[in-house]
Image (cartoon, rainbow, N blue to C red; front, side):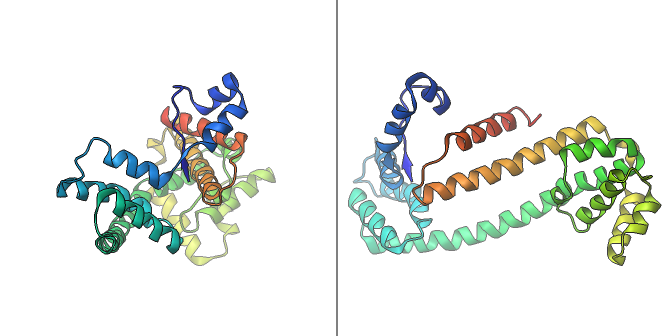
Length: 259
């Protein structure tokens, strides 16, 4: 991974337009490696003879070293940090190990928080969408234009939506009873019935429902593009301009609220 210092005050898309792709490629080529950049920024303006400052620099740089998968490279970066802040390598290895333990605990907390957020957010959105489509069959075609059954992550939700969409595709009547007849799994039937009984359709705003789904789709696209870019960087591959442009567009839309 290389860090590009952009002194033009333009985003990459603007640089490519104003100065050409060769200029942009040279900027990337002349970029600094990530750990070198981290160390340089961390020690800037600090008195490294101070123990407190050594600790601060180590805490800033070690997380970046920890994610390096290759042990040989990790060892070299620990050595480089050791030389920069004049701290024994063995001590830095111990700090790295502590960081890993603490991060495992943080990951567990984050997963629990994400699970609660999913339960209160995405799951609720999916159930409201299913209930809304059943109450307003004329809206199903519009949902089909922006959604696929696989967009639904909740248990049995993808199956239920698949049945609703299939009725719409065949131009058949869409009702609770019709959908229930198409569902064979008994647990899925129970879950479907629970949605019908528990979701208050009258309180659902259809515009907010569509806006929420557009945000969800953008989030998924963001994660997919981010993963692709990270994989290309880790494999030292060039990032296609169209991929980077799409990533920039998605980020801009998300910042605006995803609408």
